[in-house]
Image (tube, rainbow, N blue to C red; front, side, top):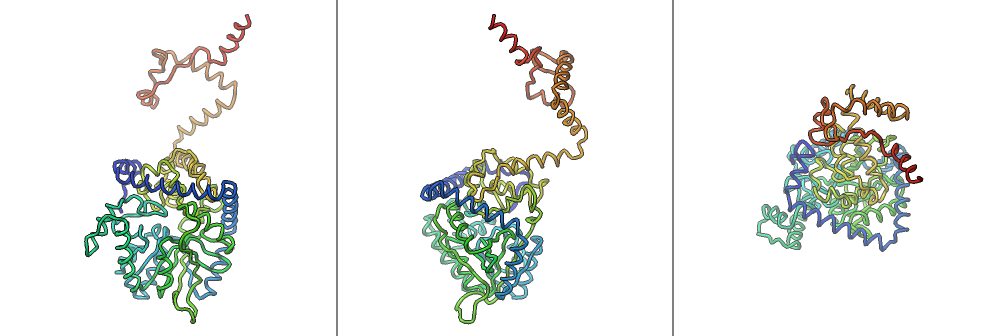
Length: 473
């Protein structure tokens, strides 16, 4: 999907699409309501305790990521799997493409994977002549539309049922109605046929368990479980941070993930896959490959943005964000939308390219409050704004000198008072009707659109003692 080159153009385009805005508002509103009801059922105190524990687990993993990666890789290899530790997205794509060529794969069935979107896996496999089929309903819809996900857990949130019916009718042999049950029925029937001819299955990974090498897949449709059961060769793609130490930690995360994402007590299908099938097992892959992707994650370790790696991709911050609810996901221009995308995109892809996203926020803090693992998203967005300004001002010697002079003046009472006296003395030629009306560039451009009051003869704090004395008399 082609995106406009600037955030401003993208969000203006989004604001001109009332159908999209209505669909996103309805979708996020429903998810917010379900989440609130679920948390109320748990109780605020218990929910906050869950968040504290989850934050602790994620921080511990990130701070000891090298150890847990090594443990995970060792356990996957012990169970007969193969591991690719890809420094870049290109390395991950090349590994999977080589595997597809080696297996002479024609049909590749995928379940939902944000990392596969991040590394642009599908186009690379299609160039090899592979038929790549998204089996998640939302992903299948946007694949037919030639678009990217607009939401982390509901990728086709921006589409209404009439638009989905048009997409399905383009590939259906029979005319479909716009009823949701009929559309889901068509997708189910169409995709089940594809599962029977699978050559390679590709899944994402919600969490990888370091002490067992197990891969956790959470879906509400069961498609990931079918892929892991039927694919002769299974590839799982995961971001390097998506690790948990043990199954005990998984119990905490699954409860938080479901409630934060959709308001459910638990996702419908939670599958733990432990590599290749045994001789006495009836299903499971004969060959398993785990592709662990860095792609910019490791450079965040030890920085002020390290906590963003805590993210469990629940999408709760998107549903809470007033900006996302009005412009949708595609306005953010990359794979990850909403507040988490406004942080991840500049960090992964560069502030020079996506730094504008730091301004796609009201800094209201709703995203931070909603985050189940307590990522301080609004603080990070504010920091990114500062980083963007510093990057843009790098080399602007005159401006830097001016700001340093301003800082030095306001740091001293005597310097401040002296500067005020001088400003009062020299402002008179520039004043008209009590306002600064003239000035040299760039002040002259600024004054075309704004009023700058002239400095008064006395400030309020200078007048107040005189008024106080008058009252005494």
